[in-house]
Image (tube, rainbow, N blue to C red; front, side):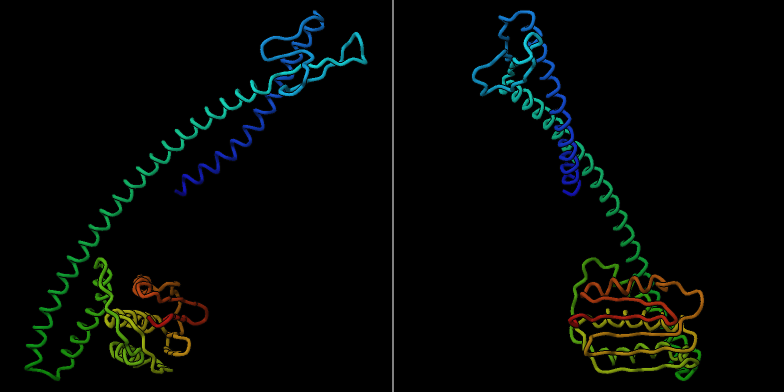
Length: 316
């Protein structure tokens, strides 16, 4: 439709220009035709025209009249009239031919364009389905692998429940599972959005537990207040894990988390290190897609500090 509208407008402008030039050329042609009949009259004063041309038409109505000065009598003018109906028919025939040609051209061009676009979109959909299938297959295999590891870890913990190495392995396994959770949810086609009120403050504190070791050497400032958001719990956990994890990973010594219930905003701020790009990886983009499902918005500001604003507009 956009291409069709653009072509119609474009050809409309071209038609206006063409019609003006054609009208100008037709006026010149009619003048020359009338001049020829005027010359016949000069050679034969009894000549009164032929076809759709009349010399000294009376009355003038229905004729396109041209005036010529009689050389033998400067005070006398000779009228040569060209029937308006004949010129109108010629103009209508020209317009009809032009419109028919344009219609066939526009229809053919739009049909060709639509065919090419549909073919390209079909290829993209096939590729998207292949990538989604590959992603789901990988996620399935990864899920099986992590399930096996959890079983093995549980067996080892029966004998050495307080072993520090086993505890670190368990935390690492939990983090791996959390990091791949967002990929799994986004790979699903049209997942059901089972929303319910979630306590943002509570889930932030749970997400911070994954990064206790990294935060042990950094300053953590929490300005948290209770705020409930209507969203799927797993999706919110994925969002918080990715955003907080990004902020922890790329901070030098400071991490500040703030919840503003009146504005419905979560602010995550850190003292960004050197060489950090604006987006900080694919995780932020995936997080933005998850939030977009619920009509929420994620904005990033990078100056002396890296600040993330999550706008829970309407809070779901």
